[in-house]
Image (cartoon, rainbow, N blue to C red; front, side, top):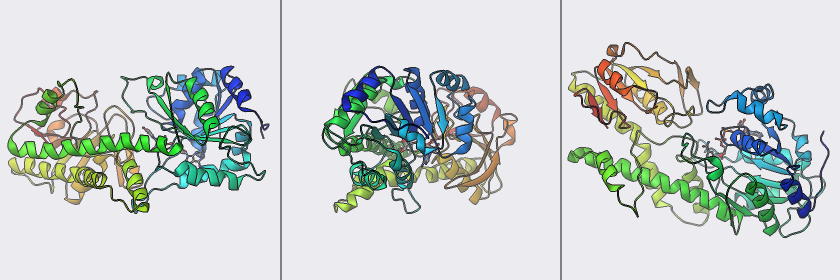
Length: 447
Ligand SMILES: NC(=O)c1ccc[n+]([C@@H]2O[C@H](COP(=O)([O-])OP(=O)(O)OC[C@H]3O[C@@H](n4cnc5c(N)ncnc54)[C@H](O)[C@@H]3O)[C@@H](O)[C@H]2O)c1
């Protein structure tokens, strides 16, 4: 068991400045692990907490389970003292604890905060005065103050309270993770860090901590403002993607190329941001986060109509892809039933190894229901078994002999694919991502 620290605000800030502060990160997933590496690169001693024993073991033996994080990066962090554990008693030795655990929806499409509450219950016995606890998991406004704070206070046997003004107690804040996986155009430390705390001391401490690894910290007046900021950003994306998905369907009927329209519209130097249509939403954020807000809105007798409409349009996109596939096969005098179809790309977006909520999973299930023989190719997934919403049991098919398939369906436009060669070798290509842009061939159906 680690030694318990006690520190005044000034002490902890000093320990952050001198890099003596110990940082604990709970949840070593797509968000928590890269964050741990950022702190390690800045010479902080970081402890990663995770309930998954295999992840803890991989990290402690210098390995990685996320494709874009190389084992060398973990080994480099180990030189600054990085290690992983499932033992929550080590929370006592941390100056700051950052929580990055999942926030999915349950089977009724309602927020599932069980990972957050489970984490708080586990860390509460080990918190100490002067410590900073930050929630980074995306959630509805009110979670930090209504759920995290009471659970921390209730679960602590020493009666430690949350410090709401400068003074004794544990400091609590919310700071959303704003990363865009696979987007290397903005370095993570260049993404401004929004911070809302329970009281000014929490904001000051969280700003000092994040200010040591992010170029800019944006303090806001409360955790609820920070929670809502993240949801606004993701709802904005969700609604705009739904808009272009709907306009794509209209454009197809009108014989207009939506991608040409978007390319022209985005030459406007102000007032327009380009969003692109696709086969449906995926990932752990955009398909899920908006419904955290629509659920919370009901408490205020408020209906979030934009969220519901966007959800409806985006959810129907895989079904639209199936209709288009059926029409394309029909042109070749074939039916979906009995056809051999190769799905290209399973990840929810290009060049990442993340399958969560990917529309490819729904598309494969729908094709199978209609009697197709479905295969897939994705360099990031050797096999696909069962998940929260799917049970596929498939293995990766090599990208050769493409002429054997009645249709090749591009669902994810990984940059490693040679689209010219794919079109050349295939009988029929159904392209849901405009990946074949610039290739002229009667074999291509863009939808
Ligand atoms: N992935 C993204 O791109 C992204 C971007 C912005 C925000 N977010 C948000 O960040 C949060 C985390 O997402 P993620 O993608 O990193 O999830 P993830 O599933 O990749 O990782 C979560 C990790 O938490 C661990 N875990 C679960 N319960 C735990 C517990 N009680 N104690 C310790 N560890 C526990 C899991 O084993 C897993 O390793 C979510 O709220 C998500 O919405 C994710």
